[in-house]
Length: 258
Image 1 (cartoon, rainbow, N blue to C red):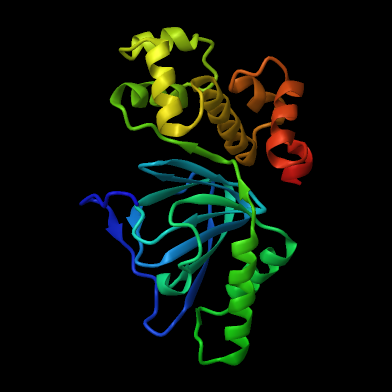
Image 2: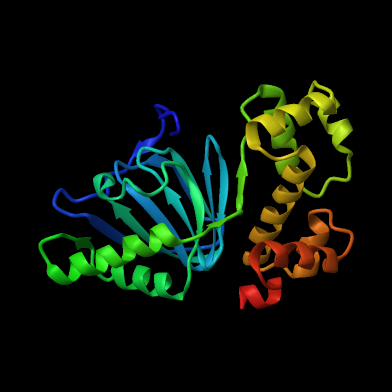
């Protein structure tokens, strides 16, 4: 759970009698929702566009056919890449105790997509309406069965590792060696490597590779061509980026964003 900072906005979304509350939004490219938190568990889904969810623990990318699960009282911000059609489900926490208690990216199949879109046609779902109760049960069952997607970038907590992470995120296409970046941030590469593995479960090189991929996904969603996005984040060729993209998302960038 993120520590609730004083400047984070409390955004109440739940209804007293509702197990599920829904909202639909349309956002322009680069729109940012500042830090806030809810007293409900939240599923954030984009039927169009890409979103970046950021917390103190890291960031999560939400392209189409993916969703981010955000437990209640987790402070987070949301940034749009491209025009975004957001569909959000807010669950009363007592009804979803079996779902994760930390942020994660879920793979959303065709059935779950239809359930989410359909759910958003009704602002509040209660147990008193039989049809809503049955459909909510199906929705929860499908969410529990959804597989996880590796579209997150965990944030280290050590100040030295944090400086390295922020440098990489600010300049994802930099050709500077990791050894040099670590030294400029006040520690040896060996020390930073140890910290990254301990705090993010990723090697420093793998973390940088993931940061580059996520940055490229946001760029493509905002309208940049695949070749430009690949070169911008430091790939030597578009083909190398496409291989990496396909390994993470199951198809080529061109096919995915169609």
